[in-house]
Length: 249
Length: 313
Image 1 (cartoon, rainbow over the protein chains, first blue to last red):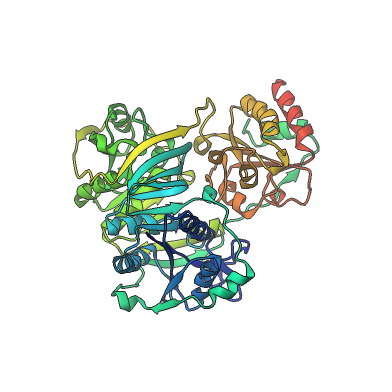
Image 2: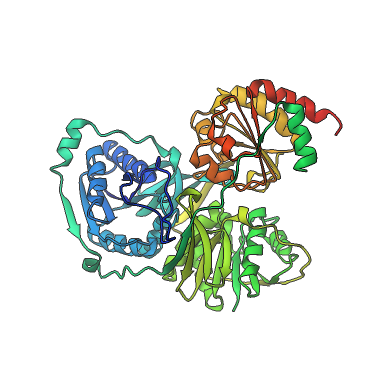
């Protein structure tokens, strides 16, 4: 079966973002960008399924600016087979992304979509669930273990308080959580090979999807900071302050 | 104008996250109906009816909704949605699983993780792990919202709403429940605890984590948290993780032990009322946000803390 993995180009997780002084958003100029970490886990899982003989082809899709080609190229260097870039330079919302992915899936007919549970820029945690809804497919969100057999898949999910296992009929959408796997690094030969792998260029118009955002961003501000408090000398002083000054004990 | 709150519950009661979400739902300014789905949900429905601000409890008792599986519950919500302007759920794993599915079926862009309600169509929400706060206005006819529950207080009791049975779509049996491993604990839940004591990688092993953190937690009646580093190292289970990718908490007192204070961790606990940091590295970033800092070895300090708490105040 084919597996489709959507990936997003986001600010690298090590970068502390700065809010623009005019409140219009966060500063993205000259900031290091990388593949969304949950998407790396998705790519890795798809590659493992191909290596286990369960999947035949891993297709990477990104919806974003021209530079998202680099993100797709990273996934190809990890070992994915080919890519599709749907170029859109403005902000993308999960609902529009899910609509484009649905159209691509109608053409490509994968049996499994593995998406990251959330992008670490907008922190929405929506795209996989929305895509499953539009396709009429079941969803296995926040996955930490996948087991595929006989047209069905057991998904172990990280839920509040522990783990839950559900059984889904394929085709299905999975969203990945941190502990599903440890993504590989691309080797130099594979980085070279990835340069020759095909990336198909598309636009939202090709799929007839209206990208106009449904949410209007009115402003973006820095969170109210906390100031450093006092250092205490020992446990007795700490407990005394917690009892008398803070009143929390 | 009516708001539908989708309850997260265990059959016997609404959980703390849902009660906080009820406070947020009432801020939208419209009467609130609460949907309680699942067989054996009589006690949870009765519980929902006792809160101020609840006008009506809808109980959908079909077993298809057990364990709040996303496909049937989303189908149910969509079949009920005609009467509602806003659909609200806590950002628990159930809420996060179900609501985007509902939103897409309604062709609505969801507003996730709302921390403040400005008006019926305008909301604040954190982005970039809480490093920026965005104010967004929704242009959709129906608002689909999940609530960052740490930002709202628990709703007050004092209501006596009627309970009405409802039925709706059950989906096509695309998914089924197999089982779960949920840690049973006498301790309070992380997301609703008044006091949390958290350990980091400095604990060094799962055994040390248990040996040093647990006695103090027991003494304080505290929930136990952990940094991602401690969880990744196997010192603490996944569901103890506090941070951007774990749980977001806001207790009265948060005690961080041997936690350096990575951005990811701070995103999950910086709204705590009082923060205590115990770390032997005086340059650890955690001290920049701690109300009380103690530069010392946690292995010395925690036993002392346990003893000090025994002394009369």
